[in-house]
Image (cartoon, rainbow, N blue to C red; front, top):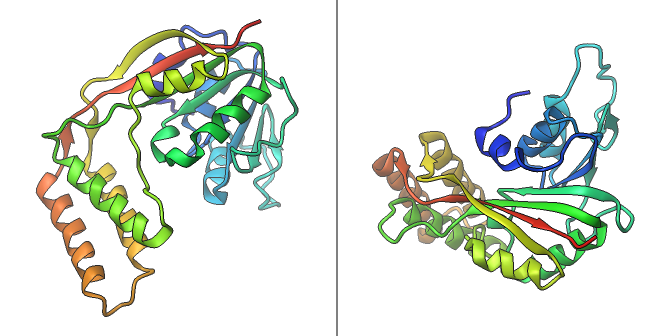
Length: 252
């Protein structure tokens, strides 16, 4: 299992070995892979995306695993993938000892912050460690800001809410402090952040998927698609901004 350097750096000073862990917002399973590689006794990877659930399971697949089921909710070894909303995690109170939120909160709209923070606190055992790894708002002169703004405009039109919100580390620290957590440390994981061609293309693809909801003959639809393609070509790639790692602790 390949584990990104940002994940290994975030986990290196936390007691992962033998712990029951939760990856909040599993995505493609980067933090899940890091937790398992660091010796976690059990990892619950929570995602509301079926494709992400399947990807997380595939990353830890053994050559001896049978593939006669397509249900990604089943457990595989030390990993259990839970297809669920983070506002209603299907785990009991005080169930986990380490929680990771690696690149989660930038795709959480402001209206959902409190509900997710409350639910993560509910499933956290006394003394639980919480790792929040995310991005500071991009600098004003970063070209990628225009692409992110376009992505948010397309998502607002299609879904009624933005796709991306970049919360400063201090803001998320204050959020969880309000739920009784203590900030243990704050470190830089990436500075600057490398936004590669594939990253930019992925963000442009979000624009394309959202404007599909608009009428085919809409001038706005055509303008958004053209702008996405123009920005990806013009930017190419860029290094800008900072990815941070917050470590918090719940009282014993």
